[in-house]
Image (cartoon, rainbow, N blue to C red; front, side, top):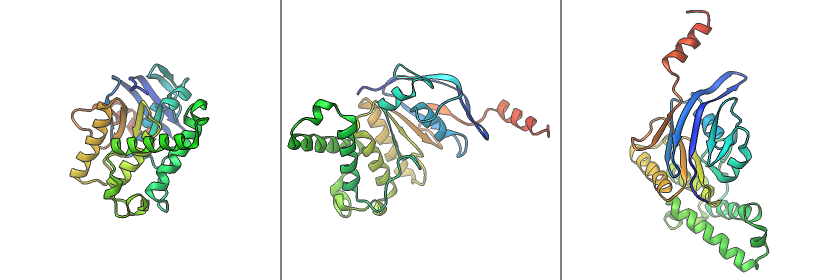
Length: 243
């Protein structure tokens, strides 16, 4: 699946507690590394979920690979995948790395592949699944041999960056054109952040459009900020009746 372009105009989402994000306007070419930058609580994750078709925007429009949001969210979900999103793509700490990979490959084989592929001999299907896993692991930079117990390493024993790489690898098994990653730089050291951004940059260069949530975007990324503008802050303050 090829990379997709993303545009947004006055994109916003209002919930029961007010605006999660509002007034987002952006444009990114296919194969871009897009950083959704802002402080915690500024609607970053909601914007990520909206751009990947998982949440329905209530204002403005966005186009992802030719599909318009919010009306064609199903089409966007089919070309995208998510990684490292709390409450959505959580890894089971009791399962091993190998178990996670086998489970995801089986799910993709059953629900994401063609009917013709499902009718192939079992040995051929197994080889195909193994190839998906190997390709995804290589792209995510996760070396199973370097883990304490190889593929039998439990998720709870992974370092934080290794867990991010595993989550990305699982998402890549479906060969998406769009990859959304939440909290890229959360609880990572400076060196680890650099590694994480290098990984996402390499995925974009290889033809997957990447949207990544962060507190501080790298200079070479297409930046989308969820920080409220001065006018929005003033409007919010005035709405309290104290201005």
